[in-house]
Image (cartoon, rainbow, N blue to C red; front, side):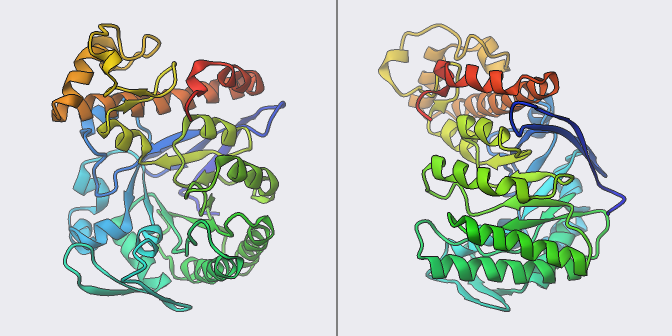
Length: 379
């Protein structure tokens, strides 16, 4: 195993599969379960470095595709990697960028060796093999990087999903062999869409790769939260979760829905990320103990109560729903800032509470209480 990374399981809830752990990295330790704010272009939208540190964000994300297109991975490397470029002192994870490339179907060409695509910035042509992707992510310098994978859309016919899974498995081996930076953890990605037999096959292929090379430092579940009903996603995780290595972190990519996050924690997932909290904030929507609140609604125009009376974030401590609605209606940037701050705080606080309940051995009760509360409405 990589001496620079260690995943330490602190507790496992007896009434569910929920786990509390600590992932040790060169830039600090991450207490799991954890929500990871997304900073696609080396910036979590609407929030500053100081605000993220005040929120106690233990880790943030960057996206390899977008950073490759602008400003370029070589420039980021010259600046001291993402940590130096962003002046961020804590762990960073970079997504491989595959999801973004494969969403550009009209400009993308895919084969067993790699993928050809055009930059969304200037239309220039590029080609990535798994080896190229590892080189670029090594230049970006994140603590945790992801293998290059193929994410099939939803819905998709089984042959397309099966081909995507098998290419992802082939590329996982090439990524594992070519990755040469010991101070980076490489996570494998399990694909297979909604077909649990294909996901089982992918996991077995990844275990074979580990037997032939070296272990992946973590396992991610890709191809979920792409438009399918979350009940189908949760059923799939329940069927395959136990096949993932017990002593490695488990990362469910692209999920930021509070209720589905908590259900996934109960199935043994440790890490989450999503643009949902900042995207919905820019649209005027806030998570709350009452469920989602659309601040554009006229009922908030003279509501001088806090955004969420049960929340301790700076937005809720100092600003009313009426004021926040005014900012959103007036298209003031401050509205996006204050709601983004609140939504990120909400998810970070939710995972902290989930972790505490796991350590106390009562996660099932915690989850039941959540489902019985107004907070679970509208998700």
